[in-house]
Image (cartoon, rainbow, N blue to C red; front, side):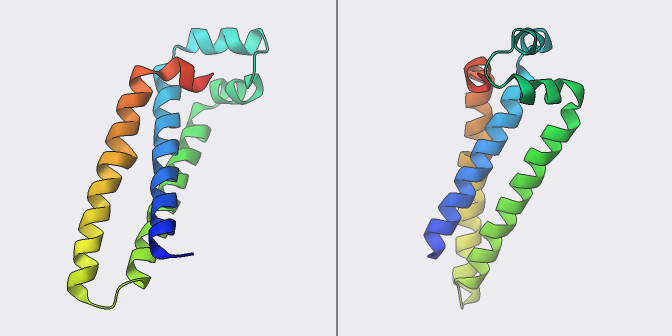
Length: 117
């Protein structure tokens, strides 16, 4: 795969995992328990989350870290010069901060319940 494709895929993975973890933390535990008791779509995963929330959130954090590592490794392998690498890292770091973290958190806080459904 080419460098931009790997970087964009890693950015999308970071954004999705961040939004999912924030949405799960935002919704009411009573609402989640109701979905589990009525066996609505996705009830098994929600039941696991209600039993041990740190497990699912830890998995999301691990996924974000792995995607950030892949992004950094692909950036390092795609550049020869020091200045080009530094500019690329700063640009992608800003993209990860805004598109991968801030925007998904804002969206997940605003539309948490539809995202969990």
